[in-house]
Length: 330
Image (cartoon, rainbow, N blue to C red; front, side):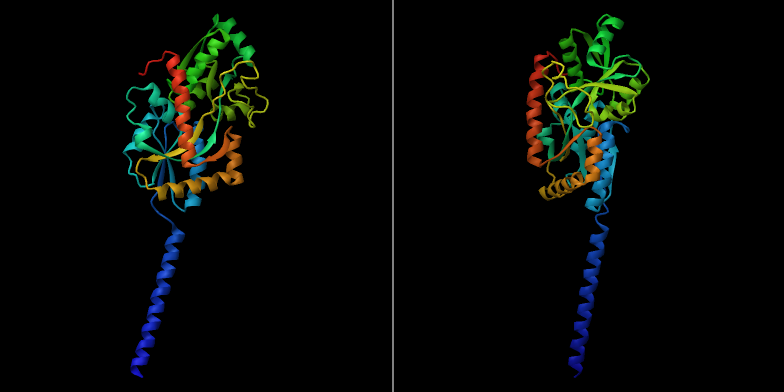
């Protein structure tokens, strides 16, 4: 009888322990991982890439049930942020949100960028493509590319400066190509990110700029600057009244850059899969999709393999263009 009671008490105690462990496990799951995920951004706060990172960070935080912070490491066209990523632990808690410039272009135009994307980074997933555009400041009378070309010829005898968000960037090479197409002597004026370039455009310190649509979209909608032409094969949904260069009879501006997340090489595949899955779910949310689209992005999920393939193809395309321009890596 005593033994029976003792066994019964032990069973009850065991059930209590099991229930307690179950409740504790549920509580830990509900609380999520308290270690923050850091999203590196290679440009200053306020620019297009920074705004995109903050939109995604807020949504990923909820999806992953884990803090997600944006860490701006501005400078050298994203080179500083890329070097920070290379040195970060490969534990899935440090990511780099980047477009084509840092990952694909910098290794082509810099002798020693301090990182090798093929060996130091691994693609996580892509979430959008975008196009670059030519915009004019509010202080110019131009409202179209022909009017801008006429204004440059009238004001500067065919010479003009055009802002770009980073030296030796795709926008800088596009400035040269635009000058060649229209017979103008255009010189790229490089900035340390799109935010300071935009500040000078808004202050009418420079008459035009070439950058991504996300860099220009808000001030264009506010009437403070005017986007007069976009690259790519089709007009942008966020800028339906702005023609493509192809519509203007200028070919060669069809290549489309990308946005994606990258992690340090050696990051466990399970961590990459978890992050990619969360990103796919986030950009599928109508609110997030619409917010990114309103910034001039074409929102589309790219798997790890698709992003890596796109990056390689983009590097090959621009490698040919850069070499044919005679540019020597600095």
